[in-house]
Image 1 (cartoon, rainbow, N blue to C red):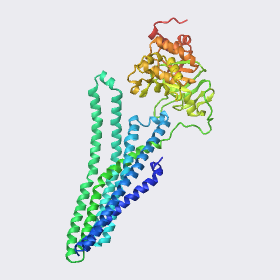
Image 2: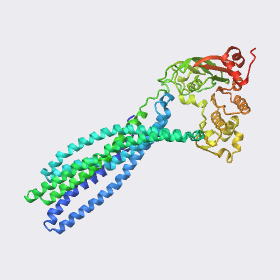
Image 3: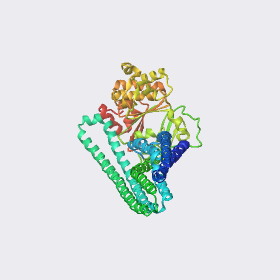
Image 4: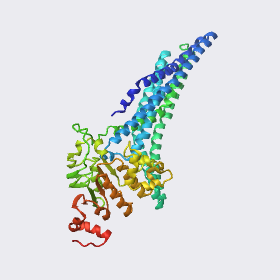
Amino acid sequence: MKLYSFLKPYRFHMAFAFSLMLVELAVELWQPLLMARIIDDGIVKKDLGLVLELGGLMLGLSVLAFASGITNSFFAAHASQNFGFDVRNSMLEKILSFSFTNLTQFSTSSLITRMTNDVNQLQNTLFMSLRIAMRAPLLVIGGIVMAFFVNIKLALIFAAVIPVLLIFLLWIMNKAALLFEVVQGKLDRVNAVIRENLAGMRLIKAFARGTHEETRFEKANETLMATTAFTLRLTETTIPVLLLFMNFSILILLWFGHFEVNTGEMKVGEVVAIVNYATRITSAFSMFSFIIIVFSRAKASKSRIEDVLITEVDLRDARDIDGKAEVKDGKIEFKRVTFGYPGAGAPVLQEISFTAEPGETVALMGATGAGKSTLFHLIPWLYDTSSGEILIDGKNIRLFKLENLRRQVGLVPQEALLFTGTVQENIGWGKEDASDIELIEAAQGAQIHDTIEKFPLKYETLIGQKGVNLSGGQKQRMSIARALVRRPKILLLDDSTSALDIKTEAKLLSALKHYKSTTLIITQKISTAMAADKILLLEDGKLHQEGSHELLLRKSSLYRQIYQSQLGEVEVK
């Protein structure tokens, strides 16, 4: 999607703002001519009436230009701010449609920079274009044209100098655009370090790694500073170069005009008018350094924003899906499923086949990196399989509408993520229209209701960012309650009971049976696996063994090792 399409709704506002800017420009270009007449026909001829008449006209035109400028700012601000609003909304909408594969293309810090700093660059550029930036080049062109109407000989001096300066400016602009794209990348890195430090502040303090993190941030910040300084120095060279050439041109105008006035071939007012145009053009050129910086950064930001907007989402609803199809029973079937992350080497999952019957509880066990969490992410179609198929209620997940499928899946991630807001808002996040009774039932099922009742404001208690004012176990149970409130047909618990004691976990597992969900639990606890109807044991991305606790004790040496490491020796019957 091209960013120009976002400007269409504001064409009237932009056109009106541009028209008002032209009014300002016309007044500015007309004033030197009036000044020339005041000098030649008024002051030289001692016609006070004409001086007052033309002076009053100049004053009236100045008031008109002032009013046009104020109104122009209003319409330019309306167009630019709404443009930025629309772009940010569109970017967030696109990001929310991304699959997990799409999200790996952009770092979180980069997306934040693109949605804030880059969008700000564009909306500020649009405002400056309608207010000042487009006026400067038009003033240069208009000043040269008007100079030819006043005196062709003196105007030719401009005609010789201006093109050279314009070529120089275009070269600087292209060079600066490339450099500012590098600057934005360095800014991404600084934001990434800041984000990591703020998120891990407690860990940094616990490990006394403050000095190390200061050094790491200083390096990223210093790189950003050096790159930005080099880029700004390059763009700032335009001002002295432009002023040197333009001031030299004005000196030539005055020297040549002096001889022309003395010979009677030119009037004093004409010289004043030409010098006035030269002065205005010089002031316009002095703004070009600022304009180059603004447009160069905008060009880099435009490219970065469009990278997000034009990214092809690899997981979309198929055209022939049944939009009304919903998960009814929650039966899950994996048929020879293989999956590998883009750009990675060997597949994470290889030839996985199993069935989870409706209402059944299945425990997944295996070493770190065995592919357990990846398997979870395939069920709600957050990733697409490389080969094989996944069936829900006997139907390939690709035939479900994504929204319908995911509304019937309750996923509790390994890292309990809570949002800033009240307890009620966090649990209700799982179901928008959840009643108070549903919220309480979900909290009771997650074994967190009694804890909430002890909070000062109970369900209205405010939770800090990422649940900073809650313990690990409380955050896990809150996340489980958020999944349970939607009464999902499929419940996925990704090691979500690791912070719970055995007694609380047993109560939780018992409560889950009342929801009649097909429940898959990733766990490292034998006690949790023993309570499941079936255990899937993964090793190196393959299904090593499946069955009940007793069956795995007999058939799997790996499972026996896990059992012995936690509960001691076992007698195999």
